[in-house]
Length: 142
Image 1 (cartoon, rainbow, N blue to C red):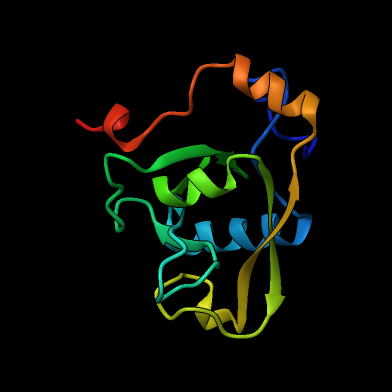
Image 2: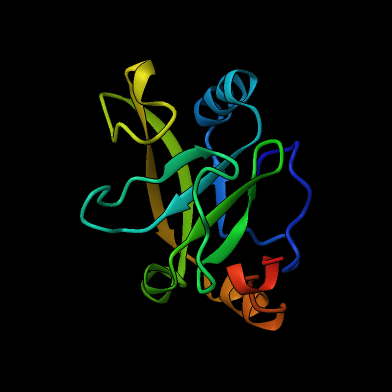
């Protein structure tokens, strides 16, 4: 967990966080584009790359799951079908050289966001299971 982030609702366990490089890029992008959001769909067009959008330019579906907030209160959403596969996984958003999707705001920078993952420990899973279920798009509609 990054020292500037508050503890997660599940006893400090977070499902998603940023590397320092991704956090720095996200801050620069927010200065340019305003509040941002991530969405991870796993669909055919973006593969497994997290997509970063100006907040409100991507419509979150009712079944999308809010994995958490990264950086300066940037929501990270995942499609329900992806969450079903990745619910036992901790994700770290990193940034690497190379072009990603043209729809994600980092594309003109010549870099792309990339997910690194590891399995959650048994203790982390137990704490997440004991916490309230993650919010969905249906919970935040309106």
